[in-house]
Length: 116
Ligand code: 5GP
Ligand code: ZN
Image (tube, rainbow, N blue to C red; front, side, top):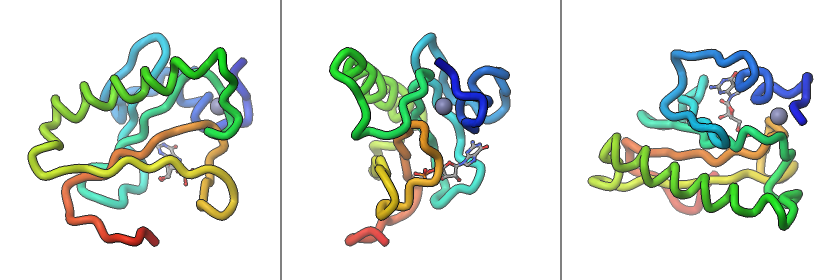
């Protein structure tokens, strides 16, 4: 069920456009409002699940779906020419700030390792 206090549930519910790169019945891809790279997208399952570690077995197909949507977007934006990075923050130490599962796609600049 959507969570009324959740930023991503609200964006998904209200069908706000403009920042949407992809959408289907299960997954939406938004341009990050505070980009950390020239390309910074968020791959978000529409179902409200707080964090990766709380995915239940019956919903695991959504992770595969998120990856297949990522491939589509990566192809469309030609991100694999120079490369990209995927990030899922989970919990306090990771810096997760929105507790509705999302995967970052970062691209368009040389990334550093180890990450900050
Ligand atoms: P986290 O820190 O939880 O892994 O990532 C949350 C991300 O959501 C951040 O990169 C932040 O910039 C982004 N964000 C926060 N609020 C909004 C919003 O209203 N719209 C969009 N498109 N991105 C947002
Ligand atoms: Zn939510």
